[in-house]
Image (cartoon, rainbow, N blue to C red; front, top):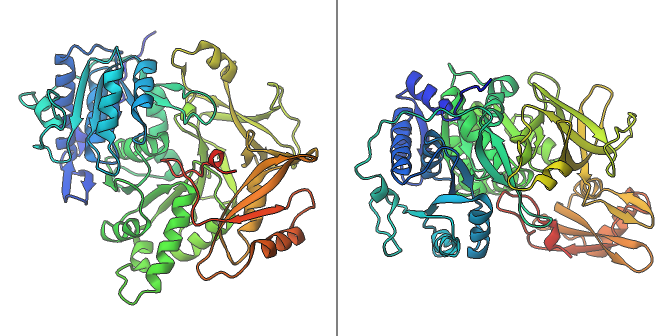
Length: 530
């Protein structure tokens, strides 16, 4: 029997219960929007879309960094009964055209961007290359700004004359709410179709997993890109589910993030490992300056939750963050295809450093053979590919039934990540199956080597890959960012690593680098290393 539910209910319920609570804070402009205001503007977006002929089930794309506009458009698309297609703001025109075509988007909202990051220029060029997308709206930084493209309406112009009230379209909870595109590290990006119930249930994890209470609203710092599943679900939608406040930073910068954590009394921070590494570096730098305005004691006073995901968190970062900020980072795990949360370290339990916790409520996990669906026989050392089953699993890859069949069987989704499970059912990521190095017939997991390297006092961050080798098949190479003032040489680090690891594991090649390539979501982009 069909069940009516629209994800926009998360916003509407909070707007009804807590109309005057702050929903969005944007320090860059001083803008503070209440739940009533966000709901009203989202209604105007929905009215505009319906006026443009958007029907329930139609796809509407959105390119926007962490600005209030992202949430206003996101909720408006859902209210109209349409499907949100958030796009990475770093996409070039050709890539934008691909995503618009692949998702069958009928309309497209795109932020104008800056000279350094011309999101609007690339977006409009991509729109012009797309045959099926009929409506383009450019979002200008200022609501009354002029359109940079002739004949193209701005967000302010599009909403002019529309009503702030709207009867939200009734959708079935199994209808597609959002299509999230995978990063495309292998082949063309695929769109994961996430149902209204997938996204709702994942957002509601905030109360079950993090102990969030609508009567004691959180203050989230949003540095994770909202176009990505982690920021969208855990921050934006999680906050809406409890009537909490989202403080937006357009892109992650460690020092400004620390300052906002202090001035905005942030209680909930979520990030990927490189962000935690960045915060620790910025704090160290701030504390060495006599003019620093960062007071870590003030941050510690309010910070209640620190959540990590997106990649394995180095143990050394774990320990140092708890020491400095007084909060143990709770690691979790998930993918775009799982809405995204699949597991998290449970509230109140002693955190097991390096673990991604236990399956979230209503979710099952198991280890399977990487080359089949057979379950791995359990032992403390047994390693297998993580498979996930539950209400968080996507409907499938949009327009790709074969890829869906490869990824999902009998409700189980295979993740592509290698892990192990301890006797208490806690899971640990070993590595991406595609990142595993085979040196002379031995399996080497890059993350294990990276963890060891980061225990060296002169090593700040490390990324390990396999490079072709004539006799061993692959050789192990480490790219290392050194601590400021470090004196260790590349040869010395190789010699040190040789003493710490088995002969087949330690890196024979070390290259010092000033930085590492990263995705827009802060993950280290190993495919660009060689």
